[in-house]
Each structure stands twice: as structure tokens, then as C-alpha cells.
Length: 329
Image (cartoon, rainbow, N blue to C red):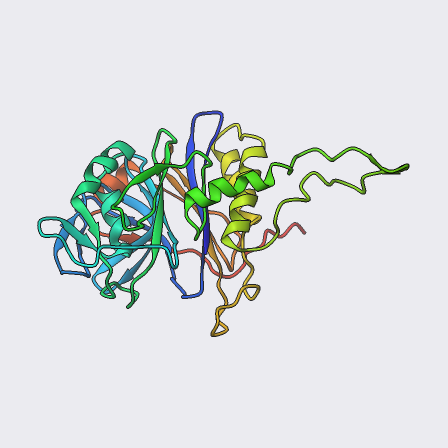
């Protein structure tokens, strides 16, 4: 589970945001990975080096920092989301190509591509392999959303036909089914509207609306289908923010409509699958905003020129996980 969206503000700033909904405790925190960061493929132990600095939600597993979402110094951003019972990877490696497990893909994508066009061109050199060699100990079914400094948004869904970028004109991504299914399903919700419906007659009886009812058709659950529809509606109808700071506030309100409280959704073994954090990535100003589950404070960390030029080792940024309050008296 997870929800992601892209959005732009009137001042031209562009954003990619997501909720991270998962049962396994990822312990992710804002993390900076420098240029020339070396990482080791879990699949074949090949060593790769990033060209560009990355800022994202990271955690160190084994030899590498793994990044679930983030952006690079040129504004290319990405997020990985669960794609259960749908992701299809190559069964065998291809000689002469980069053969990766899915959870390493963002390291390569953000570390070695400046924008969507470069990513599309360079994808031909990469293969995602069906393998349990990754840091999670079993094959992870994932699909990916990308956006760059222009605001162009694309999804990549490994479904056995290669790594192909598809434009995401809705600007939203959740989980299984695939993007095309979700896009078609929106036709079932054309009756949802911002304004209330007017009074109507049933026979000779006039029925007057009881409060606001224009959104009555929107689904209220936490399934991938429900979250996609709700986010697509809210994204398209919410007032466009004027500037970057207002955009962060707007996006967090949209994400709140699909944020899952701990205990509401349980796995078969009883473990809660919940929103471990929210992330808003400002691709224009190179700022990452991070809200952990236990503390609704909005933390920000900027990819500065000083970080890019002088920070030569990975750097984790601490956040308080216990709720902080602003006392007024």
C-alpha cells in the first residue's frame, strides 16, 4: 500500500509526494547520498557508482543505503510503491546489462539520470530480476512513479514487457491494479462534484439536500482503488497553491485523506500496515519535507550546494519520533 501524487504551484515549483504504507518497519529517515556513492548489487555483487547526489527517505541495509523515494540534484524524483500479484521481472539476468533487484532500482534511476528523457533512453541498459537476493530477503513486487523539474510525471510498471515509461496524466499512483485500470475506473466517478446537488422531485415530493452531497460517490476505504479515486478527485479540485510553501501544506492535506492510522488495516498475521511517513519533494527548490507517523511536525532538509560539493559520505538527518507540541500558554 502507498499513495503518490505530483503537483505544481502557480510560482512554477514542482512536487512529487507520497505516503509510505507498510507493515514492515522500514525505519526510513531523510538521507543524503553524495555524488560518486558506490553501492553493491544484491543480485550479482557488481559495484555501481552514482553520478548525481540524492536526497530521499533512506535506510542502510547490508552494504547499501536503500532509497524508497527521493530526488537528485537535477530535480528528477521517484517513489517505489507495492505492486503485489502484478509485477513481473526477468527470470534470468542478461549478459552485458545492469541486472538489479527491484528495491535497488531507484538508486540507479536517481543516481545516473538527470530527467525523464535521459531515464527513458538509459532504461534499455537495465534489467529487473526476479530474485530473493534483495535486502528484504524475498522478491519485492514494485512499480514506480517519476517526475522531473518540468513537472512531467510518468509511471513504470514491470509487467513482463520490459521497462517502459507511461505518462501519468492523472498525476496519481497507488497500488495494484495497474495505472491503466485505475485511469479507466475514474469513469465510474464522474458523478462526484464539488457543489451540492439541487433539490429534486420524486413524484410529487420535493427532496431537499441534507447538507453537502456532491462528493457522496467518492469511496471512503483504504484499498488502492479507493485511494486512487479519492486522491485524483482531491488533486484535481483543490485550489492550486500560489507558491512552494503553500504547496507543501496543500499536498499534506491531500495525503491526509488517504493516510492510514495504525491498527485500521491489518495483515493476515495481525501486523498493522499503516502510513509510516509522508514525504513531499520540492523538485524546484531541492527541499525534502518529511512527516513521521509518531510526530506531525513537518521536517525539512534542503539539498544545498554545500552538501553537494563538500559532503562526501552518506548523511542521515535525525527526526523526533515522539509528538511535539507548540504550547500557547
